[in-house]
Amino acid sequence: MKLTSYLQWQKLQHPVLNDHQTELWLRYAPGNNPDISGNKILKLKYQLELALQQKSQGLLTFGGAFSNHLVAAAAVAAENKLQSVGIVRGEEVDLNNPTLALCRSYGMQLIRVSRAFYRTRHQQETLQQLSEQFPGYLHIPEGGTCEAAVQGVSELGMCTTPAGPASLLICAVGSGGTVAGLIRGSKTTPVVGIAVVQDQSLPEKIRAFLPADRNWPEWQLIQALHQPRYGRFDPQLWQFCQSFAEQDVQLEPVYTGKALYSVFELIKAGIIPKGSRLSFFHTGGLQGLKGLAYRGLIPTTESRPIKSAISPTTDSGL
Image 1 (cartoon, one colour):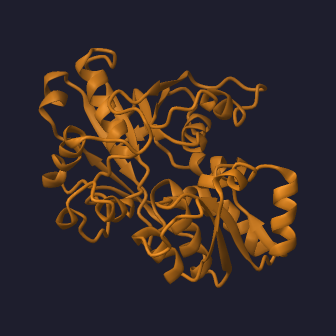
Image 2: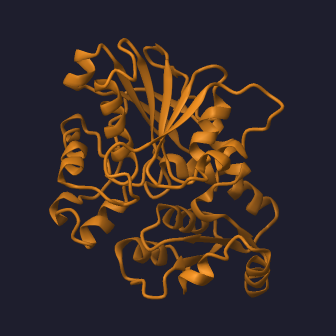
């Protein structure tokens, strides 16, 4: 089975946008399976193709207790009749939390490891050990970020909105692969990444996917302007996410919601000029809402079943 999706655009409505004469277009890539959506469907596209070409037995990857990537990798493997193994950070992790229970429902074998062992996940000795333990498995990095993932995101097509050319492309940044893909997919449109993690090495990680033999569009990395520590948010940020529900836009406060909040702050501060047309990529991650409810960080009643992040206005093949 091939990974397929279609792309949706939605123009957001908000008084701040009206006051600053700014258009903000949200783009989302929902999959046929909502657990494989957003940037994950793009990041895994070519890695799945490689696994199938090599006739791999399965996929082996890494993630935390509430990893969107682990869920997507488990779902992709199951849909393509592949085995899957998830190396989970933390020996104390509850394998019955909503995220890991979903992984297990797709047949993923979860192996909890110490945080010290997890930090060695990039080392050749550790990768060799895992290869011997799981021969014939394609290794996928944490978050899915690698050259194949960046290539997949570069095909997203964010530069032209239904209303015309965008003046700026924007997305949340965790591991750097998605924003690197946006940069590679843009000929001249500037790109801004909103970092939702505090990682001083992020610019270097992004540049590693941008070969020096060509001229790339202007790009900038900005730290999230509200609750910049990863996974942290307060009632104000959660209320901001909820405020778009009437437009059938669902946001989570860890990635897309935090990044979008920062965009509105940049607009209000005049850093994003009046009259801009913004193209913002919704990276998905909505399964994480159930994990937030499980931890008591949002009300359980507000973590409703998710079918799609937004209502479609414009569809196109991917």
